[in-house]
Image (cartoon, rainbow, N blue to C red; front, top):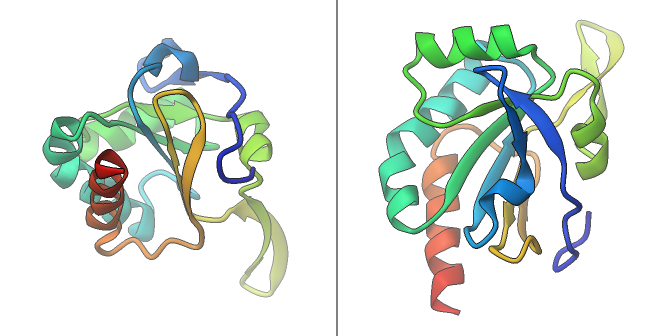
Length: 155
């Protein structure tokens, strides 16, 4: 995905097993954050960061969507355990991960595996890609995204 490119609509199941389309959020900026796996340490820090910054992001007009390859059931458990206040999308067949190019070769305990590289995308109200945060460090990331959303609003 390239900056200022139109983001193609996609459809996924959320943590409630409801169908969600990117186009459901037309007219609002969307924060789409990809994380490797529900309920793992880094992902928990990142997800809780968005939880704690959610009200400010909402006030800035943004929608927050977390996305990983976990099942809707695993997403629901993760959401409940940490009281997450935004939808988690299940990309079990990796269609959206491939659309955004976040699947990368990783080294896990000496083995090469394909996994999600923690990446956040900010999509504008017109479904144009406005910002990419690659190789995200979970600590403080949600505040960094909030600052970017506010900055985009002033442009």
